[in-house]
Length: 350
Image (cartoon, rainbow, N blue to C red):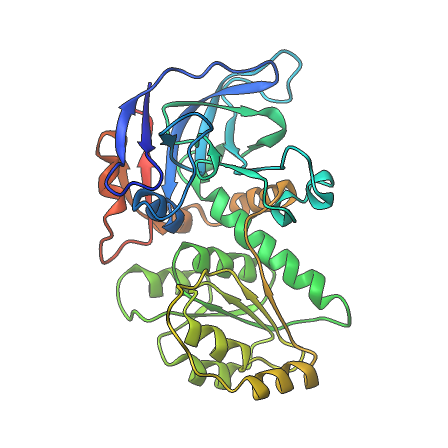
């Protein structure tokens, strides 16, 4: 079979290669790969900045944003041939910490987890792949074109879940949410915010291309002004931060309404000093009972919530979020950014 592979730590090693067909273990599904989403993590691995090959191997099959169709399921399985499925990314560590032992492997305390297509386990970027039944999520058949968005949606499903858990420490009826960044994570965060009945606003730098229209079609409001101006005007109850830009992060933190909650999902670059008034930030957080939290990855609960959210979404909106589809034999083209890219997907089927 063909697979998108890379040698972690070596820039320029990304290539489509012939690899042996996978052999499913007793409790695994054999899945025909349909599509693979490409995100910033994949690009970092391809650039040699990140990633770990399976033990004893030099190359890693890339890809953690999966979509496939079950070709074979074990006898007695809850899955059947033809089911549309996505594989979960993370696996608990071999000697589970308390969080992993309770199914909260997205909150692993000791860092010994593995991740498909990222850390020590082959990913889903191949024409065939296997996945343990317990780490497969069935999708609505109507998502056969867009179900590849499930993994990034699971990330924001977790972010919203965390926000609600924090908010429920006291009376909590948020009205207005601001999402900073209109990439795939930001747009999907906006989708889930709208589905929660909030007045959603999205902030990004661009003023043309597909992003403003995607936001408006959700019934949300698009902004391209300075972050501090937008937060001062809106005073959002909730901020989902999806840029990782240091100045945007701190403008968001200091611009919420009292009892505001800011959830950081964007990973910042290092080496960019930023001068802030730490005393004022601390004072505002304390006196207004505000919260800042970080959120990454997702567990099975979040994947299932994400599957429900995508099933309820406008199919044409999801379709338009995917702005470019690239065949597997030209998969490396998916790693070259274009001006109007939102979500780029590698098509694994013929």
